[in-house]
Length: 157
Ligand SMILES: [Zn+2]
Image (spheres, rainbow, N blue to C red):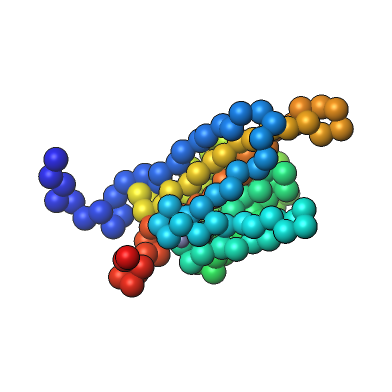
């Protein structure tokens, strides 16, 4: 199929949701562009080892972004400022519209990424994993964002 439209703005964020079998360790995510592992385990701790293609990591356990590239942080700041302008006070922020416009959970995640100005050159991998914690099963979903727009010529093998 031939597509003569400019791809620069066209297309939706690539958003993929994957579930690991219960009881497995959190995923070891490697960059699909350069192959670098994004976290390494050292003495029971996870150390960030992001490559230049990683835009963000949303930690399910932390329920917030635990890594943001400079570009992502800038986009997020703009997004946040727009939210502030649209919902300036407590009353406005108590509304369902605010909840809908500001939330990053589940199906809203891909829409938020579009709000941040991302399109088809972003791949968001949502990986859900579960295990036992204090006798109860718990599940978390982490989301890793890789920005194909960050690929440079010298990344080619
Ligand atoms: Zn990479």
